Length: 535
Image (cartoon, rainbow, N blue to C red; front, side, top):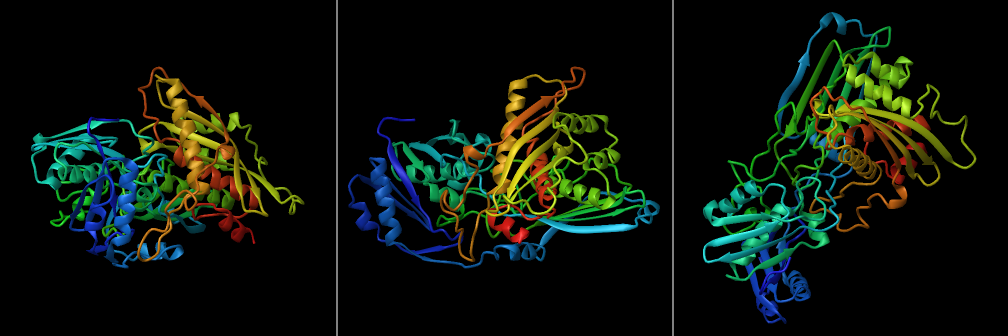
């Protein structure tokens, strides 16, 4: 959008989350062509110029003239991160518990495994952007935030004014997938606009800003344990998870959730870590199985200290929990010597859940022998496999099952999802086109998360700065997707958004194990990880 007399802004930040700005040469930058204002407020630094390229040049000059003091207090990376997480201060909640000592005593074989997911980015195609304008004591903000009213409340708190003085207007942005940098850049623009009263300021984050500063999807550790009886049925189930919060959106009564509000001279307190209550859940979303087990216990360890900011990334904890739960169901099926479809049906009493699994299996022409790896090592190094995943999103929305066929190149470590089938029961289908789009899009995005995406960091900063550091799925990697809708006109409509992500990641994991005979429990399934696992 364009407004009369609009100027352009850029913000200058250090890549280390708690870095302190010790010095900056503002005078030289103020003399640069087109520069209208340079704003320093504590550790917040920004510049406005008449043209966008002038703002970019000025921001780069500012960056080169700054001196920062880094904190060096980020957690370890790689596998050490997950051991670190399990030792941190946490709020421990028993999410669900069912006791049956008699049934538990019949268990004859016990399996216990851990699954992990790394930090992941929203990776919106367009970096976050906002326009702000102060007219006397009134502020107008144009933003692609998903929550304009909570944003207005946090802006009022951070700017120390009344919410009645602020108008926040939504504009479409190029991608989001949860809580990305949209709210933060609105605060940045409001601060910079206050330094140039009357002028509208368009402030755009650069790609490296988005990767360095947006809230990430939390890493997670899921430890699952189960016992089988002599007939191969689960008698005792345990699911423990460790996660940072998935909910640092504006507005929180005990602090703010806007980045710049923590960096200004008089900072506001950071809002405490909170979970979203069940049944929707946050980190524990979809941790409670829909399967019927005589005894079960689900425990959520919500980590209270947040070294790297995390918040809502599409599905919150469901992607990770369904990955773990459904991968473990396949592992248990293998231990019981039972076909994965039959094993699930044996533990389900909900007829609608059974129906989506059976329909998906029919679509894919599932057979007990389907997808098994070829005998020996093929001459061309190519292995093929098939896997299934299932969930009822939030345990209160649509039922969804996904089956995928994968190809594993044992020489390069590349995994390709060739085809995907999905049956969905969303009750009364109101918009079949929209429903299919949700399921297809979820499968495609999950394929990207599962095969490629992870944010790297060291003890000072994130190391992921651009697309070369954070590869996403290419068009040539997009699988063919077939979706079948089970329309139930006599049932109420169920939400279908985000419903296929969990089943899809589990299906890919199970297909990989089916193809190779090797179980990957740590996301993503990158070529390096695959080659190491198959070595």
